[in-house]
Image (tube, rainbow, N blue to C red; front, side, top):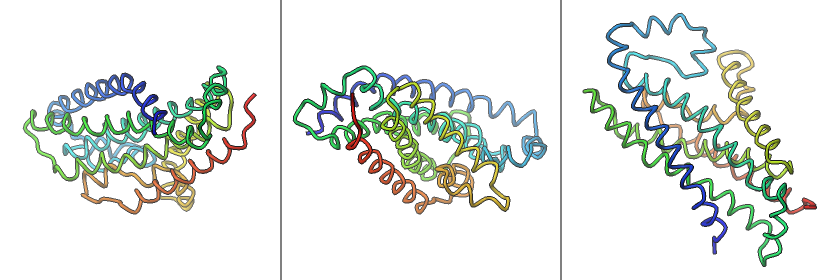
Length: 262
């Protein structure tokens, strides 16, 4: 049981490791830069000159504290945007790539249901999502201590824990694109476009009379700044993201069950 999940999960370990190393280096750079930048520039005054939409897009409240700096420079960019796009892009090849290269026929010739194949392939996305979020809190905490700063351990753990539902929802967008389109490259572009488009919708409409439009964006329900700067853990938002993931996976499963694979 779970053979497909284990097989595809193992194949993602190398890429997930490289991703973790890359994010670790990015984290080290940001943390190392923080004391130098704050000593030379009043970051809060600098941020006040930014357009409101840009401040909202990256959740900027205060860059003069390590929590605010990491929330805006690392998590709003590295997790919300880069990781969100990465998992959507990766998930978009789960089905489409096998269909495009005529591997899906062979898989479905085995005594397995389409539902099982789809769900276990999606489960393999937990490998990069969990690996990054298990290792990176240690890297961030060690880096913060190394420059003589401190950060609340509980908030640091939660900013990673609550990113898991967000990343799963982004991956589910990719899964739906992968089932809907038979060419992996098109599915990947579609998934990235949808996730990035929803990010822009939430960013641009926030604080306006059209803010209700942002309710369709996963980014509305994961706010690193609220967690790290204000210590607010949006558990309801996490539940919404998990529910969204379930709906998208079920929709993908139903579409895949009805799909004619040539």
